[in-house]
Length: 449
Image (cartoon, rainbow, N blue to C red; front, side, top):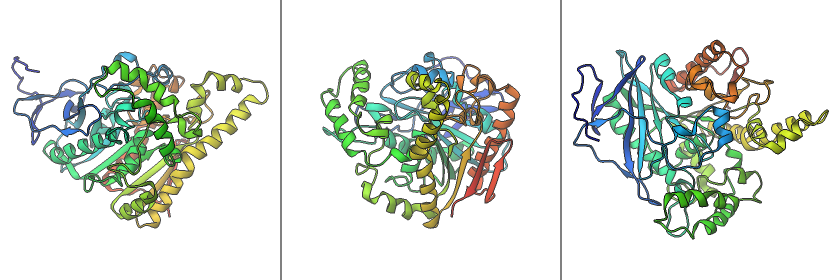
């Protein structure tokens, strides 16, 4: 990417260990977007990108990693398929820095997007981190990592497992090396991950090679209730994937991926997220050692973990069959509500509480939250992903999202500012009042003991 045009006087530049970076200004923040942090060969661990000798033009959004689009999810989030320009072989991150003088190094918040380990990208417009950086005077880094068959199966035929986790670790190394020169504090880094991104953040606490790379984690709606006992399911999926050649065309890999996912059927709720992190494969400990590993690292991390009141209502809305059941007179709404309550408990709530208690008992600092925002609003209620319009983006980013269709802009903005303040307060020093709530009925939290 060689630009011959002269660089204007006030164009933001960062001279960092990775090279000389040219960024861009955007309504109160400076962006350095689409920075290459590692390269990948298919089914291999990432290779950190060496320092560049040429200027790095960080002026385009990070391209998405290869994935199949999920139309129902696009509609819920108001995302257009046009936003995905997938590129294989390169991994990117984007940095957003407040465009104002700072009194000292700023806290760093690292966004790990969710999407069941098969979908999503850090720079989707609905995930815009600008309001968070601007209002809270923090630096926010959004990371892309490999997904699906290319990032979260492995463990068969010399193909390593957990490649997507290794990608994120590579990004964290980049941040650790370079963020001080961009005004950030490398000793005050908070991961905040949603759904599978929260699952990744939790597992990065016990992954090899992450020592000192982050100090706090915010784990949002992680499906920890289905993260164990997956070995048989993964093995069955691997049998389907093993016929793929290493150099198969990318569209063939994406075509085969749903068939590999289908092999997970019959494994109960776990099969709703067939791809995932795998214990007993580098960089993760054996499953039987995981609890001990989390206890061991507890004193090193501050944890803020929680779930929404009606997580699985999201998947209800995305299922035509369940929506038909929901519309049955008299029993429909009651039956589906009971189902949402029990699956929310099994997949998200029970294990979030367990995680926090174990952390606190082992000498770590942990808070638990429950997000109630949107409760009673048809059809989603306080569903999975409902905090994202409050945390990321702004009303304009979310104007096409079914999730918040009937919420006016002023409410979205005001409630969003409250949630962003809470997330950033935790990121600054890992401390929150021992109990509290965000009014009106946004969420409540308490300290685990």
